[in-house]
Amino acid sequence: MSRLGVDMVSYCVSNRRQNDDLKFLTLLHEVCELNVERVIDSAQRMRELIEFACKEVKVFALGVVEIELVNLTLLKRIQEQTDVEKRNLHVLCDLIPPTELDGLVVRNAEGTKALVHAHLLVDVRGKADEFEAQLKKIGAWRKTGYQVRLEPLHSNKSLWKNLDGIAKYGTKGGNETLRYKAGFGRDLSEDLDAKMFKTAKLGRRDRIKTADDETELTLEDERSLTVGELAFLNEAYERLMTLRRDRRGYLIRAGK
Image (cartoon, rainbow, N blue to C red; front, side, top):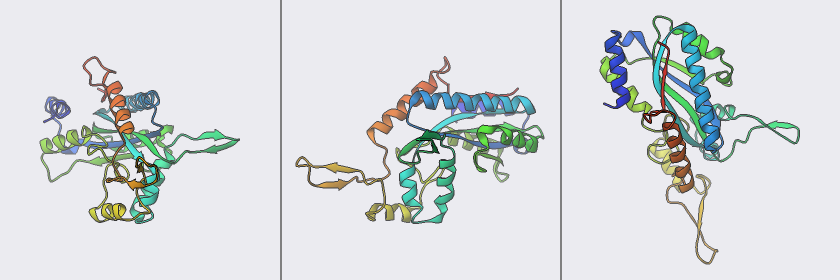
């Protein structure tokens, strides 16, 4: 079991908690440009808001910050093949901070962005509805109806299996296979993934030019992260880790 899992088990044993006492919370906070300082500031703000909400309702939450790279250009092409991804794309676009350009308020919904979000185990102490309502009052989490998801634990699993699963899910990394996912927290079906690869109109259309600068070849894996994106992700997580002396800056522990 991961260190986060051990922390969750320790809390539940000390406080005699069971499945029915707990909820699993996913928060989609913001979609940022690939700027490490901007992403870390966003993660810190999300942590502060979670701590505020837990304090207001007097609940306890334990979980992690997660940074996932999402490619909006790719998602737009995916939605041409299936309606399933349209909601994910719209949610992500709504989480992009607007900017002013020539007097117009616009959102740059192209290319690769960083989705700052969190996964947490919450001891709701019988106040699940009140806590969810408090979360949805916060302006940063009212941009779209899908930012706050508070769910019960699996009733057909033991508490320990639930905690282990939550801990593994929270610490897996948003791009654990070094690829873009279809949206957030899920992946494409194999048939659609194959269709993306075979159809010239899909994928990122990245090209590798030959020495004579004439022939262009499609990347073997249209959804793989670039070297630059990997470097960004590594730097962002390194900065996140150093926010605590024990290098667990990804950890969120809110309430008492």
